[in-house]
Length: 121
Image 1 (cartoon, one colour):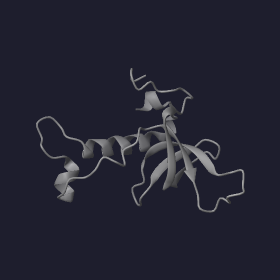
Image 2: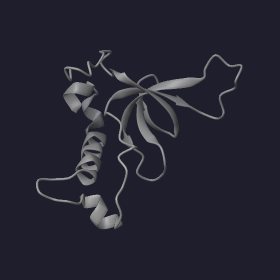
Image 3: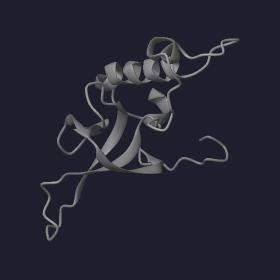
Image 4: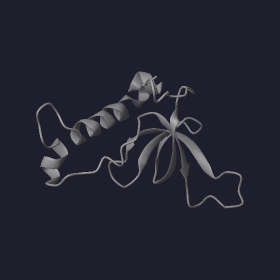
């Protein structure tokens, strides 16, 4: 995840958090239930899952419709643990932000490279 995303080492805690989220929401070996299903007592959807490090455009309700700034660009770090939405690293601001109204560019990663869905690279 880290190598493919080309995000900085300072973001490793988010990498581990996202990896743990994936681990808890997926089946392992011969199991018929995920760790998350055991705790939540119901089947969960993988719909919130996004690729780590993928580019996203974070919209905010305070942006004016006539303003040139409609969104800020960030790179996906995982699901926000304390609320609905996702965490993003915003290089222009040098910080991690939370966003709920987001558009993901599923083929574009932090290093500026396109992801080929056919080859995985």
